Image (cartoon, rainbow, N blue to C red; front, side, top):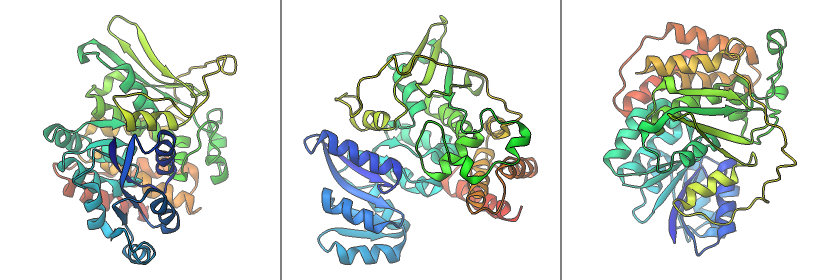
Length: 379
């Protein structure tokens, strides 16, 4: 039985983690801890069902309220509470699906406690990839990717030495605006941006998919997860989202991992690795998906992808700065304070003005993150 902690249990990924736990049953998993930002009603239901030893709520007043409703379970609040849950002594695996840089410090706490991590938080490796991976290596922790693209590459690389790898090929659906002209993109609405053609996700990541920033973040993640140079990581548009990503080897052979565009499969793999168990999806129907298309991304219309490559190439504070500015601009877009087109334009302006800084600690990363958000609020 694997003992797990779920950080971000009330979000779209976290609720699917619990669906997999239900599917495989109590003989496979014991939920020791759950963490949420503020949705204590759903967290209460989850705690009643799974009876964890400890529950964390980022908003302290909500934690106090939940403790009254769950007198038999320890409820902790604030960042310190999240760190306590993340580093629980008895856990085998910490599933990190906290959105944004809120997941950075709990992730580091889990690593320093020697825990393996199932990672569904892009911002952690985008902001502090080198720091995180060095800490994981030092503490003997596995980082198991949950994103469908990185899970695909992880599977294709099994038992393959790095010297055999020629390139990683990340697939992208292209989002809802794949066929839009530049003039149409300037008129894109929030409703349009949230209408993803193949994936059902939270609002922030859906918007990032519409700008291709999500794919840019995945390029940065892949650099750190698999220790592959940026020049050997490519993106290809694949609207059907059936091939989740590919690896090309030095003999020009390619391995691709494919399946339904559904997160349950990579979530289950991360939870059960190195074992495999019967999944929740129906067998793949090739006659239903009888066409697979591929095109190159247009980085002139979708400038965010180009900016992500540039940030990774520049290194130091640039990836963290990119992530924080983008997150703030997307929040403003979700509040109808700026247009969809403004996201990439304002991001470009702030990236051009950013003064590069060394970042060697999580504290330094968070300082850059804070300053970036301040600048993005003012632009």
